[in-house]
Length: 200
Image (tube, rainbow, N blue to C red; front, side, top):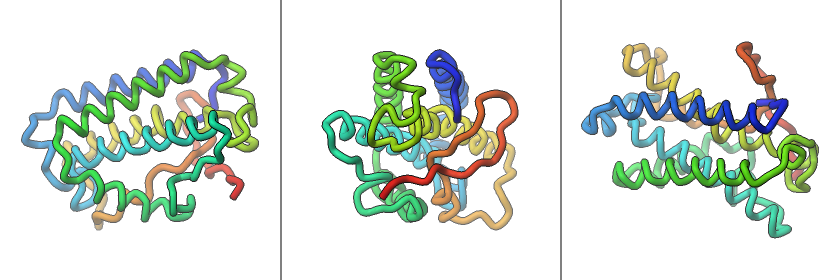
């Protein structure tokens, strides 16, 4: 997402987070382990763990950058073109975690990112290249996809699942295609865009 102000970023994150949490709060505990939420194998717990892990990865990139260390993006041993393989590894990593641990990880990551945003100036958030590790992009290019955009995606997935309208031919690999930093204008109209070119 492309944001015009710090407050627009915060508002978008909070709105999408609150909407997602309402959906999660309406789900009986028994359904959190029901497969088929996204693809044939992912459960609601898997989906939330996926969100939490990408939040954690963003925080790791940010903290590495503050220390003057070039972040390994998206994660150590993976290129952006290998996001499907990374998402599969995330699924494997968290699939056996307790529901309480999954939800706690998601909640703490969300809170920590909001703390980071609140502590930064609009210039630090919005000016392209303010942080060396973000290259020619603003920090929001990496915050948005790991928060508001990802929450919005998850809400749509859950809504479709509850309606019983999973994509035809969906498979366990399908979630692997999700989440790379993108640039798009904030607002009602959301156009399909490409991820930024990242320096190797």
